[in-house]
View: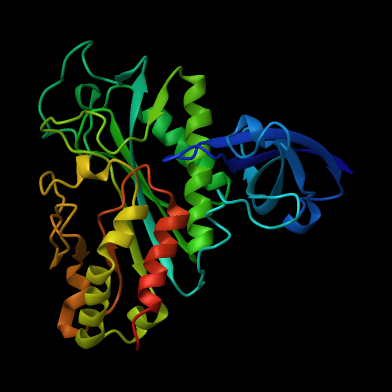
Length: 337
């Protein structure tokens, strides 16, 4: 019998961006527990904008477990928020999205590191050299001393079983990206939220914050932050075809407004048609076109196969991966094969 530290994690009721919350339970188990072994747990929803003070109880329902590399016998417990009657809370975006293990997602999470309200690595009250050498950059003048944080975050995610596929410095100084791949919309989104949690908790130790906003530098000639969503289905990987692809793109165009509605707040500041984006009110696709709504890889159209994966470049860095993956899957499911 061993005592385990269980850090329950959930999304609060703030809008338009939900925040991560956490609290810790200690419990004895003979071995590493499963989701089914863990109890539901109540919390004060009136303190997270999820209930009124006169009826404040909300319930945490464990849905995914991750080993915690910073704690002895530590486990990160991703939870859904439920009402006392057992139904999903209105702020529970995970419970209502469609899921399909055959739909694979790769999210590219961009973010800025920040210290005392200023971008980490920027001269105080000013700007560094323009964009150019920072992307995948090396050397202190390009990445400062942030690499140790980024590498430690990668190690923590790998220990937790999150399938990181890569990290890199991004086009603006102080901006970084990590990529996570998983099968199924709920699994992929769980992994992104827990990776975000691990980064936020890690940066506490360095006196830094993570700025997830999609355009933290405002109306300047600097890129914003996205969370590009790469996706494929069994049919896209194994069958594909140009006719099906064109029908799929017609569906994505038809539901442009529905996608934008869940692709993250303030996206009008980022999707301007500049800085490798399409305008927010337009839909386009193009082979290897980073200025399109959907980038089609060369490998997808090779030998006129039209199969593989596609990249939706519109989701932004503050977007909720549950809602993003769910909307993509919903649009795919609307197309007859």
